[in-house]
Length: 148
Image (cartoon, rainbow, N blue to C red):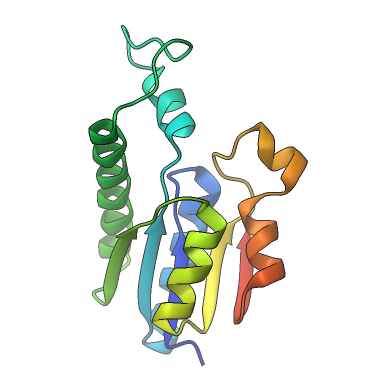
């Protein structure tokens, strides 16, 4: 039923739940899992604000810091898939709008299903413009599952 499953992953609890559910589905359907993480500088800045000496209000992360953060999150996602026994896993760092990046990857990969967390690390604009999950749900050309 689902040969290719694309999962949006931002490191939040709901995105981890989405990835774990995708792993369960992949085990049942012998599916490939494609993990897409599209970093947003303000989200990286927020996460780095928890590190002593990093001043979020005055400093945005460099391109290298964003790339390093993205790789750490994808390593975390790969660990989750490995623990679930999944071996057919690919990862991609997207650019730009997370919803559009996820949709573009799913279309390119020929995904049968996109799985996203209901709430991720989105910012205030998500409250005004709509969340990544909402946008994916409206625009996806395949099935879309939103996970709490």
